[in-house]
Amino acid sequence: MPSFFIPLSGLEADNTALNTIANNLSNMSTVAYKSQDVQFSDLFYQQVGESGSGDPEQVGAGTEVGAISTDFSTGTASPASGISQDVALDGDGFFVIKDGGVQEYTRAGNFALGSEGQLLTQGGQQVMGYPAANGVVNTNAPLAAMQIPIGQVEPPKATSNMSLTANLDASAAVGTSTQGQITVYDSLGESHIATVDFQKTASNTWSYNISLPTGDSTGSSANTVGALTFDSSGNLITPAANVSNIQFTGLSDGAANMNLSWNLYDANNKPVIDQVAAGSGVATTNQDGYASGQYQSFTVDSNGVISASYSNNETQVVGQLAVASVTNEQGLTRLGDNNYQTTLASGAATIGTAGSNGRGTIQDQAIEGSNVDISTQFSDLIVAQRAFEANAKSITTFDTVTQETINMIH
Image (tube, rainbow, N blue to C red):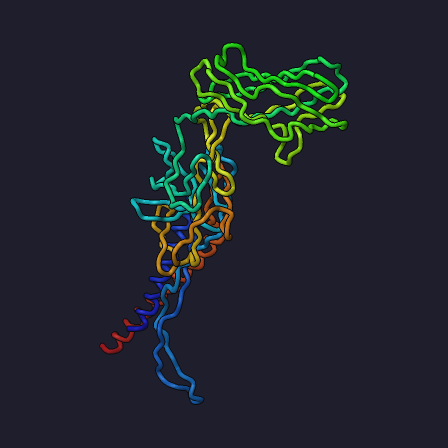
C-alpha cells in the first residue's frame, strides 16, 4: 500500500542523513576530513486524473537520496607542530600517494617516516613526487616515492671558486704588505687555509701570492702569483677577468690536485677588490666547497620542495612533492584512511606542483584540520530527527487507519 511505502522511503532517506551527520561528527578530529551533506529528491509520480482546466493530478511515491555531496573547502591548519613531515595544503589539490601500485590521493599531510627514510602516509602508502639529481628537481621525470636521506652522509665538494671582498689602502707606501685568508676544501673534504699576500709594488699596483700552509701541498703550484692594477678612482682594471687555473698539487692527505678560480668580479662584472685610502682589509670571503656532513633534518617549502640539512651547514634538495588537481572533485570515490580515487565522473587527475595552475600552496610543520562545522551539523541533526519522527508517525497513523478499515469489514 502506498500509504506505507511513501513514509518508509522517507525513513530510509532520513536514516541515510542521520548516518552521514553522525559520520561527520565522529570525524571532527580527523586530519583533513571533508564533511558530507545529504540531498533528497522526490520519486516518480502517478497521474490519477485531471482538473477541470486540464491540469494533471499527480500523486508522489515518496523520496530518495538524490546526492551526497562533499565540502572540499580547506580546513583550518593547526599551529606549527614542529614535525618536519607534517604538511598542510592551503587551497585546492591533493597529495599523490601510491598503494600497491595503485595511484590514490589524499589531503591528509600527517606523513610518517619509514625505517629507511621513506615518506609514508599513516596508512603506509608511499608519498609521491618529483625526484632530484644533484640538488635539481626534474618535474618532467616520472613520479617517484619520496625518500629522505636519514642516516646518510653528504659527500664533500672540492672548492672550485673563491672570492675576497677587500680594499687595499691607496695611501700605503710602496713595499707595504697585507694579507687575506680564506678556507678552501679539497676533494676529500679536508679544509686548508689559503693565504693571499698582497704587496704594493707601485702607485695603483699590487702584487699577489696565493699559498697553502707549509706541508699541505708538496707538489708544484701554478698561477698563484700575479699583479692587480687599479685606475685613478681605485677601480680594478687588470686582470680584466677572473683568475682561473690556480693549482696546487701533491696534497699531503692524498686528495686530488686542487684547481681554483679566483673571482675578482661579481655576477654583474663589478670588481670585488678596490683600492681607496681607507686602510687595507678583507670584508667577506666566499667559496663553494664544503666538508662531508651527516644528515640532520629536512624542510618543505611552499612549493613542496624538500630540502635536507646536514651537519656541515649545507642543504640539498632531495625532491618535490606532487600535487594533483581534479576537475570534478564530487566524482571522487572515498576509500577510507583519508584517501580518494578518481573515477569516470571525476575525470583523470592532473599532476603538477604546489602553487601552480590553481593548486594550493604547502605549509610546513602544520596539519590541516577537519572542515566539519559542529553548529551546522547539530542543526541538520535536529531537522533529520524531526523528519524521521514525522515519517514514523505517518506509518503508525496509516496503521491505525488500516486497522479501523479492517474492523469495519468485520
